[in-house]
Image (cartoon, rainbow, N blue to C red; front, side, top):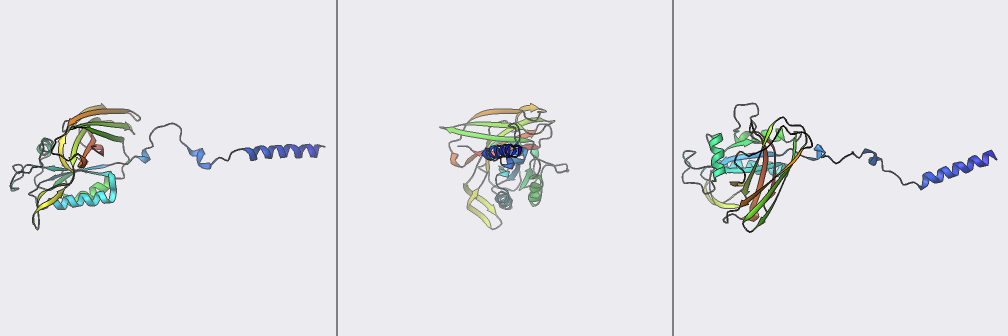
Length: 272
């Protein structure tokens, strides 16, 4: 009787186990909570290219940016800053793609020649943020693997000639810095004159041209020494120039270290 009773208990136990749903082993590894996993957020890099239509070597700098964007996709964000012919000697007639934000940047950083650039406004251990185009690729790729400190997202919509822009940020690591937010508008596919080593090209296609600063050129103060998990959002409204092709325009938003000027994170979105 004891043997029969034991067999019965065993059969009931086996039946209970067989009736249970199977649990995938990966389900044991699900994280608790809804915080952002910083491994899914990438560090983006901002290339600011001081350029001009009378600069014969500037198309080569633009091509370097194109190659980097082809290799690294959305992690590479570029702004082409056209400067006045009176700022850089020998450039000839005035450049129609100059804007006030570009003048502000020129006057702050004073590139001695064109092309010239900045990579996240990082000095890379030198005394200047200005970097020759020949070093852009190495400098950019040295930053791409860095652990991001911020998740940054921009959204934009256009009604008539007015753009409404919202920039959201979440702090991924404690940051012992004051942060400023900068928002700019760029435009792609502008066809016009460009000097090249082979001569003037009248149908050159200019990309990521700085059109305007939505925020102050060096940013709105946002937060001082934010902690991990802290979130903030800022909204902007901007009247678009009717001469711009809105379908080719982008919003570029970035956070700066307010003291050093270095870019902490950058993002880009179509304006419409």
